[in-house]
Amino acid sequence: MRLLPLVIACAAQPALSDCPTRADMELGVKLRDASGETETFRAGPNGFIRGEYADGQGGGANYLLLGGIYVVEVYDTDEGEVVPGTRSTFAYPVKPSEFTPPPRRNTMGRDNLGKRSGRHLRS
Image (cartoon, rainbow, N blue to C red; front, side, top):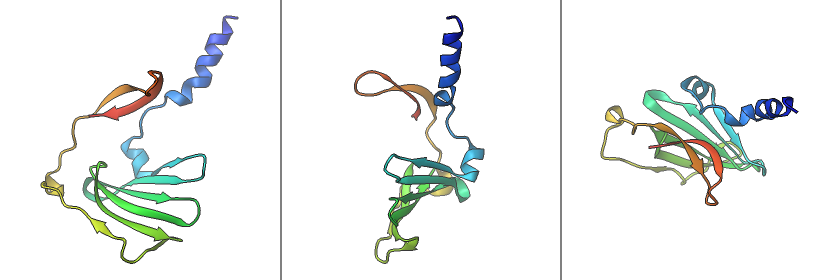
């Protein structure tokens, strides 16, 4: 019986893994939901993050995030090709070269039922 808590703790270890690192972002971090939709995030130039959403049926969107937070550009895609007329760009009162991300700290999140839902970043 003393072995059971150790086995349970070891089995839960992947669920307690850390947030993605800069090295992970260089290679790309992909999130997938049960319906087959995916979002892939990759490090871009000058502190930007490139995002790609795919609905699993050929449609999707690409976007560029300033500091991984603020949407700077977004456009729809169909079978990997840009859909004409869907590009939107956004400007902010700070130049990208002067942008400083808010300080980050790890916190334990809770869902609306008050249960532990895992680690996330909160500013």
